[in-house]
Length: 618
Image (cartoon, rainbow, N blue to C red; front, side, top):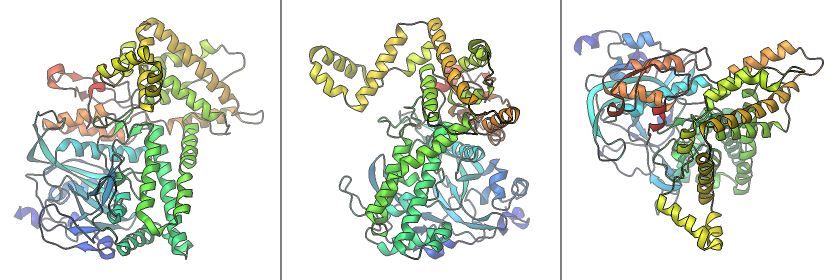
C-alpha cells in the first residue's frame, strides 16, 4: 500500500466542486447508525467501510469521459479500485448521504434516504460540466444487484434513454450472507460497488421529507413543516438545473409552476421511451423518480421479452402495481405526490391543470416514437394510433418477442402495385413466427394468477348466483383473471398446427394494413428510393437489436458468483444496441441442478432460451 501511494494517481487530482453541500443544510452529527435526520438534506459520513482486496470488474469509457477520465488512466491508477469503491477517500471529496422520503407501493414510508449509497462530491469537467458521483453498495452489499445496475445504466444510455450512469464496477473478497428469494436458503455473495454518475440524484422523494403526518401510514417526513428548507431545495434545483426557467419568471409561483411543468414533460417523455423499448422499472416509488427525468435506481427491472401489457419485472409486486401498462399512470400519480410535497410553492388549481396535461403529453411522445419504429417518417395520420394498437394486439395474441419483432419489421417489403400479399410477405412472416410463442408457452403465460381454490369458488358462483358473480366479475382484477381463463380455454381446445396457421393469418393481415399505410408515405412527386432508404435508416436506428434481457444479466451474475467476471464483456454489445449482430457466448444461468453449468451458445440478439422464463427478480 505504501509503494502504491508514492505512484501518481489521476483520480487523486479530480477537480471537486461540491456545490450541493454548500447550498443545502447538512446534518453534522457524529452519532452512528440509523436515526431520524430532521432539518437537513444531507448527512456527513465520517467513517468509510473499506472492501477486502477490491479489484475492477468493468469500466465504462463513455461514463468515465464525463469526468474527464479514460478507462486506461483509471486502470493504471494503483489506487483506482480503492478510490472508486469508497474504500479510500478521494482528495476533495466529502462523503455524505442524502435524506429523502417516499411513497412505496402507494403508501407513505416516512424517512428513507441513502442506505447503501454514499455521495462523494461533484466533479467539474471542462468538456462536460459538473457531475455528481456516488458509490452504491459501499459496505456489505451483494454483487448481483450492482452488476445489473452497472450494465443497465450503460445499456439505457446507449439506447438514448435518459439515465444515471455507471462508470465502474469494483468487486472484492468480502462476502455477505443473503437470502435472495426470501425462501430461507442463504448464500454467500461477493460485496461490490458501482460508481454512479449523474448531474444530480435528487428525486421526487427529496421534497417529501417536508410532508406532515400521513393519514394512512401515520408517518411524517423528518423535516415536516420546514417550508424554509423546502424553498432552499427548490431554489437550488432551479438555479442549478433549470436556469432558463429561473431567468424567464420573476414571480416565484410562476417560476415554480414552469418548473413543475418541465418535470412533468420530462417524466412523460421518459416513460414513453421506456414503453417503446419494453422496459419495466419494477419499483416506481416516488423515491425512485428523478427530478431531472432520468431513469434512476435499477432494482428488479426487466426488458419485456414476449409482449404482455401486464408484464411485471418485480416478482415481489404481487398486485402488479408497477406493471408495464401501468407505468404511465403511476408516473402521473407520482407527479401528484410531488405537487403535494411542494405544497404552498404551487397554486393547487394550476398544478392540477399541469397534471391533466400528463397523459396527452405522454401519448404524443409515445405515438411519435412508435411512428419512427414503424418507419412512418413523412406524414402523420390519425389512424396511426390504431395501427400501433393492432400491432400490439397481434404481438400479445401470438406471444411475439417485443424487441426482435420490431427489429424485423424493417424487412417488410415496400408495397408495389399488383404484388401478391401472401407471397410477398411470406419470408418476413416466417421470421416473425420464429419469434412467437408455442402453444405450451402461451398456456403458461395465460394461466390465471389467482389461487386455484379462489378461481373454483368464482366459477361456482357463476353457476349458483349469477347476480353475485356479475358484481364480483366487474372488478378490474377479476376481469383480467377471467380473460386469462378464456384465452387458456381456447388454447386447450386447439393444437400447435392450428395455432401456427392462425398466427400466420394474423400477421399477414396486420402486415397488409401496415404496407398500405407505408404506401401513403409516398406521393407522386416523392423520390421513392430516398423514402425507402430513410425508412430503413430510421427503423434500424430506433429499434434495438440487443437489450439487457434478464437472462443476459443472469449469465453475468452467475458467472461472477463463481469468480468469473468475463461475462460483463456483454457491455461491449450493449453499448452498440443498434449495430449489426454480435454473438457472445454465455453460461446457462438457470442453476446448477437443472443445467449442470453446461455451455450454451447464446446469441444475445436472438429469441431467449426457454430457461429465461424461469429467471426470478425480486
